Length: 477
Picture 1 (cartoon, rainbow, N blue to C red):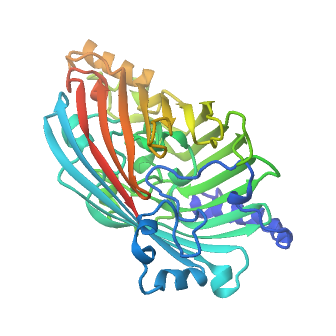
Picture 2: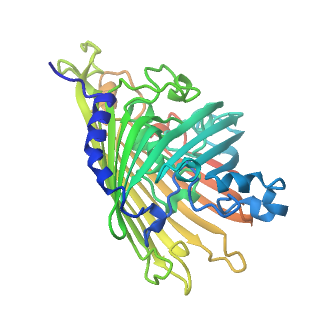
């Protein structure tokens, strides 16, 4: 009897494999913040809660540090922190206009309020090295700049999503010495497959190569999925992470996936699994280091479901042919590999690992026959603390290149040959973003942005090249 390789089966295997780590429970804890060269851990759309709150329960930067009595006149936030309970609110607002090209011109207003709760269960209940975390989004908009105005597939503003109130993550984590095990509802983009440096950009997001190829776009904002994550911190400057998720966070859906799991509480567990693993290496990120800082991430992902061939039916006839039966050839599973590097190229005297000038690159490749996009390259440059008398401002430029797979190009060419398509084959989509992040006070930033999009959805003819400009404001409390 064959056992289906779904999430339930794989979770059981992971739990069994992690069990021996309990023998290390008496080893002194080594959390990420104790690693000398630990890189910032703030992923797209998942503002991290657990970064060393102050004695008043504040995660800095926060506008609370500029308010009388830290915005806590009753002292409740501090008392909760004494019991291990901390919370944050992060409000993000975008006003963006499509100035030309795309589907249509126009302006949208969109916002996201993220509520975060972190409970140190060792402080609260005496459960050693155990943490509970939950966050939720309240999302609104007057339109969707990418979907409704530009028509592309690369992210333009990462908070874009269906208006709703949505649960995101909900998990328990336990540390066994240098290892941790996390289980619950998780978001892959909170820990995997991103550049720390890229986080200043509106288009920084779960990569297009995952969002358009995986069922439901994968377990990434605004969706998450039931899963488990194992992490191991090596003695110095390196980590390994591996996670298993239910492979479809939304389930069968005729529209946008986030409309089919609108409130984030579907908790699906029977779909074929999605897995992702990543090695992380860090150099010169310690507070006493003076060399150029580097963060390198090497990873890969796999999905155990079935994926339709992009060009041929199940008897080998081109799907574009009138002779085709219309049933695509189904492939078992898909996989891909990726690499991410953040490289500081200028470190001012006395500056830390996040100061000066740095460049980044995130590149990924996957199979062509069963995926819409088979290559993605994201790159950029960031200037931090380089403006006189504005030490907390940053600015930079970022590019996303997404290449349509050879099979998709072949399908389009087949349609042209059979007379059913008049536009050229889809080839690529490129975004260029220019942005400046100005700190008004600690915890409040205002960010003008300009983005140019070449070939929205792949041709530049169906939807002409587009230009988007606007401003983002982020307030953290």
